Length: 328
Image (cartoon, rainbow, N blue to C red; front, side, top):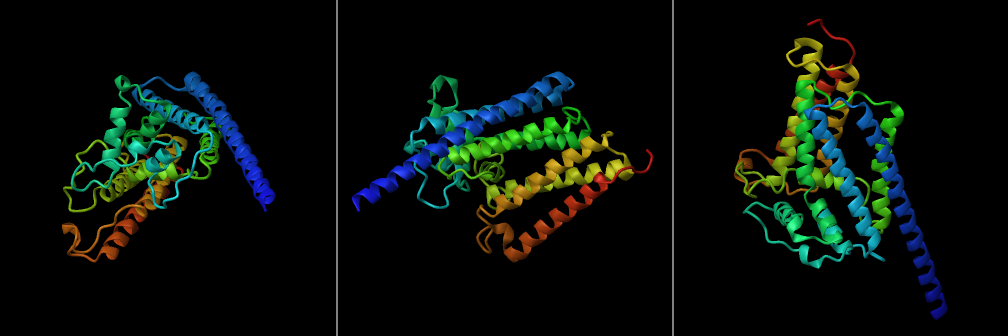
């Protein structure tokens, strides 16, 4: 019996070591693919405010992926959290052994933890505090909602102004960027023992979008994070619709090349569907609890909002993707 148990432990240890090594190698490959993208960006992108702003966001995402990967690798055998339903920053805190950041006081009457975590993370990231590698990794994950809000703002600005940060890249370069994201996602998943599933950080960033910039108090009578995510989806859909209608019929916005327009719309629509996934994880409006929902039955309200959002998105997307249009 003892020999069987020892043999089983040895096999599990070997499997864990192999998985961690594979995760580390995937992250290294992700670095290479991302550097290939940056090389193309530096040599081919026009210099302008939009290009610089998007480049800074890309560089930030690159640094976050590396710091998180290094922090996970530095833990000999990270223990996946046993409690289900933990949000991503708490999962990272468990993996990195940061018990002191798992429980933070709420910030505002309607805060469910996202604002408090982001405020705590901003203090941790202050260079004067000299954060450890693990603390910096946790803090960068906790403020991903702010980074997502900046990205959405730039995407909406691109759709409304027609000023793209870079020309449409070759397919090989675009695949390098997408491949880098996938390599890091799978690498983090392996390094975390399966706790950080691919896509979970993206969903968290949409669920916590803008958290840390407000005071944690709802002024709409609806759950603050639910409102922020839903509002982001509506803004993206309106931007897609306005761009599609403008380029096909009204020409009220600045012109935008077809390929760049389609790419921007695909990214916006992708974020909208990620937003739908994020809404499923958030506190939902409940009948009689939030004042704004007492007139309408909660399920009907949500279905109407989501159906309208999807319809607007599809209309704008189809109008923008189809080639041609009326002359200006």
